[in-house]
Length: 236
Image (cartoon, rainbow, N blue to C red):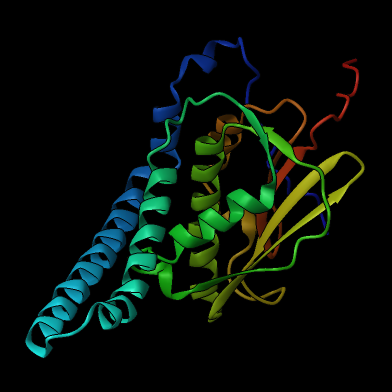
C-alpha cells in the first residue's frame, strides 16, 4: 500500500500560519458538523426532559413513594449527567493549552459525541481494547474537534460502503501513538484521501505538529502523534 499520509501544512512562523483556528475549522467543515451535533444533542436533551416530566406525572398520580421515585428517575439522572459531561467537553476553547492525557480518553468522548450526530449517529463507533501506550500531549478541545471531523468523514465512507459501524483502534510503537478509524473492508467505499479532499491540510495544521500528522489510508483515517517524552528527530 502506498503511503497516503497527509502531512501537516506550513510550520509555525510561516506567513500562512496567521490563519486562525476558527478559520481552519470552518475550512475543514466544522460548522456543518456542529449543526448536526447540536441537533442530535438537543433531541437527546428534549427526550430526557420529556421522560422525567412523564415519570413525575405518573408518580404523582400513583402516589409513588420516595423509593419508587429513585428507581424510576435514577436512570434518567445518569443519562442527564452524561449529557452534561459531553457538552462540557464540546464547549472547551479550541485555543486551550496543551496537556498530557491518554488518547483513549479523548477517543471515548469523541465516540459519545458522534453517537449524537443527527444522521451519522446510527453508525456505532466501536472502540477496540487499547493496549498500554504512552500518553500524548495536545490541546484536548482541538484534538477532540479533529477526531469528530475524522469520525464524520469515516461515517460517510461507511455509508458508501454499506457498513453499519466504524472501528477505532489505538496503537503505540517506537515513540508514536497512532489512532485509526476504519469503515469497511478494503476495496469497499471511497478511499481515505477522497474522504478528506479539501480538508486534510486544515486538519493537519490544526494539530500544529512538526513530526506527526494526519493518516489518510485506503480503508482508514486517523492521527499519528508523538508519544509523550519522545525526543524529536534532528532537523537536517
